[in-house]
Image (cartoon, rainbow, N blue to C red; front, side, top):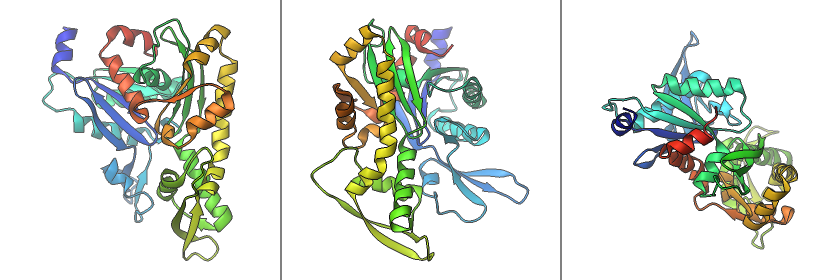
Length: 342
């Protein structure tokens, strides 16, 4: 009967990220990749109505009139607004899951390794409220390691650093279990805030999250490069309140990003110090694998390599590693039993 249910329903794996939500459908691969943003309208009585979700909602960030807010219902990798998260999940699932399915889907959701019991329950209940038949939780670094094709079931050490939008997950994995894990509330959002703070401090220029993200993507880096790039940035003058333009250089953006990136490096070193010697020997040979959107920051592999003295590799598809790994777990019931959070 379980085989029959799997045949006529479309099971899903979801990377419920602070910045982006990706959905993998069994048999079809990745079917959705959209920002974790919801536009909400609040009426005079305080009732909220969802106006847009995903890409359409992200376009509204920082540009909404009174009564309409573009919000991110997840902060630092966990649910900050239960009702809006449920509405967002329902929208994404209904978008990819045809209503004609006879059986409700099984759903795997990836969560940070440092998540609390209360937060786990909130994630599970959000998915169940959308109509999921069964909900399984898998830790993000485990899913990332599987997606990066690391041999996690073997008796050998594998180290993965998953740098997402809200958190950075660092884990040493062996025999399908996490030997040691570090979870930092540092990710792409924190890097963006560092750029916002730098522009305000140096140029008295106020910019929004989207502008800071664009600066990071265009001229941001984690390690010194020979080429000096620049970018014209528009915002509001902090002192006079009028529109203002400033030219920002790549070296100062790198300096602005250095503090949060240093915290990531320190966490990697702490994880290495807590790793058993036998597994440490394996990591020396295999190196550290970086996944997540943060892996796309130029020079991040060089920074970690120089600070740890270990080989550092970037996954082939770092942004999708977590959801691809969760999708592989969907296809392997034995592996699901081993890696799902009890």
